[in-house]
Length: 142
Image (spheres, one colour):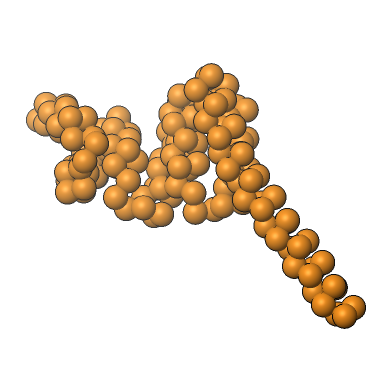
């Protein structure tokens, strides 16, 4: 009888801790998005980093970090986060688009073409942006 009660108590504690962690993960990301939308980039960066601690495979947090670094003009940090997004999800259109855009900015046209080629294969939401960036690339790289 005592063993059953102890097992039940232990199970309840583990279950509560699990739900608490799940809530914290979602809460950090949602708070980060709200802060990002309010243009409070430093505060939102902290929330996305906290989210990554709980869920290191959340590509959305890395994508938002890349957007923050883009706003702050930190090209290397933007690129690192975009590459992490691509590692986690090679078909992430937004990350492919931003990587191609960054490659054009850095005059790395061959890599930009590679990213745009991949984007064209997976394109569903960024098709118009893909075409405009492809036109920009063709005029610049001539």
